[in-house]
Amino acid sequence: MAGFTGPVGLPEGYRTERPALADIEAILELVHASEQVYLGYPDFERREVMDALTGTGDSWLVRDGDGRLMGWGQLYPSGWFCDAYARPGEGPSVQRVLMELLLNRVAERAGRSVVAKAGALVTEEQYIGVLAGLGFEFDHLQARMTRPLAGDEQPPGPVPGHTIRAMRAEELPACGEVLRAAFGDQHDYAATPSLVPAECLVAETETGALAGVLLSSAPSDNTGEGWVKWLGVHPDHRRRGLAAALLATAVAANARLGRKALGLGVDTSSPTKAFTLYERLGFTVAYQANIYRRTVDGSMIGT
Image (cartoon, rainbow, N blue to C red; front, side, top):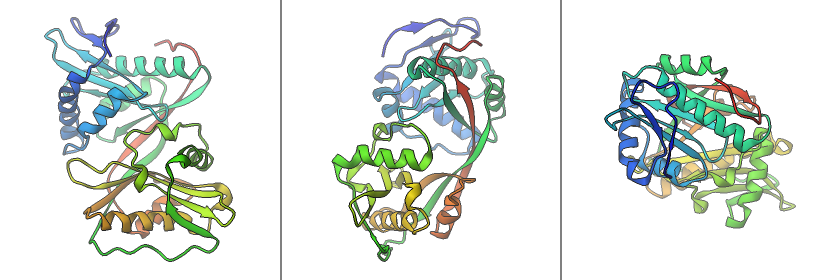
């Protein structure tokens, strides 16, 4: 992606710019610098930057007058979720300008009223202030959870009337329908970057309908931790133990692959009690982040 946009609202000499693949390492360094300050360790991975620059989302950079990278913002490809990072020590204008660009892109792409979301660690007080100034309100607390694997984990017993099995590649669109019903949104789950179809699971009824879905993405390049990207059960098939069976099957599969841990993210206030289920299955909280939301109309947003 090439080209420039105007440096509206930025310090003198700063500019916004479209990223290129040559910027991957600089972007990763910037994000890690931010995480080191606000999280205590680097968590973002090179593959995630690559996905952001090559997928169907969108992205901008902010550089200072010397060309040094000072900010990066991305719109995720599988939903209206925005991220804006600034180099530690920068004032709020970098993240504000990036978020304005991202929200305007949401408006352009959606063409209708949609809910955009953004996340911030509780330690990111300046960023939280930026989000509040742009009309975002607190939505929920998201937990990043992990489960250590001993290597001898076994798959669960059968669920009456259902079969837990590997997803077939051609079922991915149908899996998206199940997840949209489960979460009550219109996300394009099939567009999720780095999905690993061979590690995705479905819960199938005796009539052949898909009742539940677990989509896995690529394991961590740094730690080898497996990752459950999406886990949902259709509302018509809840209270049957399908979510537990899907996740326990994934736990056993990741152990069989020699991985030392399995991770996922969850809304701690989900009415499905998913957080409690995950704790029961051995997952613990690595860290938490606030998720914020605001409505974006299908037109350009004023500042």
